[in-house]
Image (cartoon, helix red, strand yellow):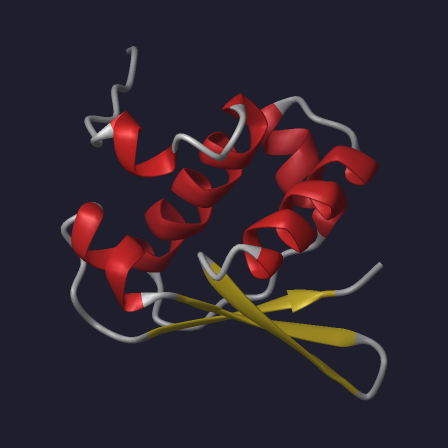
Length: 102
């Protein structure tokens, strides 16, 4: 089964394909679970991207305020997705994703 995502691409004109795919995956995962733990390696594996590519995209999304990252105990990274992004994806709750920093 093929899955499709409908979002206004013009809203993401400063992101490349990998950034949009990673952001979409984070929002999709949030819809299933309120809080979750996922590594860069897991996201890379799921999306067929390298851990380094995932890390670069996460950093870029943070720098551009699509997400906010916060490191706890130098081992766990918490990611909050901006309200504007959630609205674009049709998700209006505050989102916090816990990601293991590897």
